Length: 219
Ligand code: AP5
Image 1 (cartoon, rainbow, N blue to C red):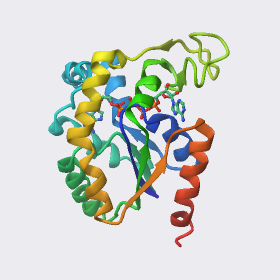
Image 2: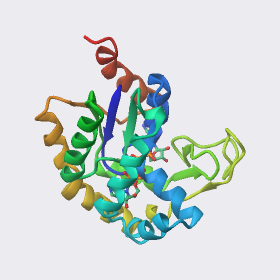
Image 3: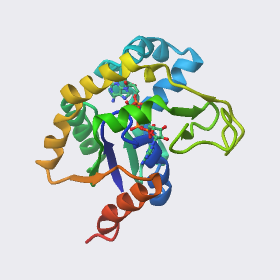
Image 4: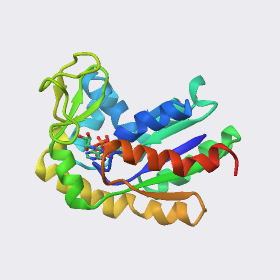
């Protein structure tokens, strides 16, 4: 299956992407994770992306699109993928259509995680991420057993630089202006399925998997 996840910052895309990609046995391709890995390794790509990310702005399309094109060309993406964080603008969506057409494949579905702004602000301000395995935790909604330590691999948990209140406000504005038009773009193509992404993480996963089941079975 070839799937895109959309939704505002903090909707739970990264959290659900881990479970859905595992369920579908496809690689999870997160542009945010790829940028953050490059920032922490100090690569030229990371240096280019960092200033935009720290402000909560989008990294320019030329940088982002080349990065995704290279990732989609890797062997493990041949049989399907889950894209988290790309596309994020209508021009990126149009380029994705062209990239997939060149590979002779199409998107199967775009899953929209629907959450109100006040809830995403609560989620982002308490988010903690594992430095080694990237697992996502929340200090109140999904806390690790020991504060600051990942349950899965004992890695150190950190707070993302772009989870400061002023940056969160800009990310929500950028989402409303640049990314939310994707909802119409994909619903007009009959690809969009929206699910309620509020409530416990496991409930949202069940809703997502239920929504995808008819596509998995070709109904
Ligand atoms: P990116 O990493 O993609 O950030 P984002 O879209 O803002 O999304 P987040 O990762 O903040 O949130 P999420 O929806 O994944 O939520 P999560 O699961 O973590 O991008 C970062 C930056 O990179 C961008 O600002 C931009 O600069 C750049 N970039 C990336 N892609 C780009 C592109 N295509 N073009 C240009 N620039 C690009 O959950 C959040 C918290 O909530 C967690 O603590 C989690 O534990 C908790 N939580 C999750 N689900 C629930 C639930 N059901 N109940 C309670 N808590 C929950």
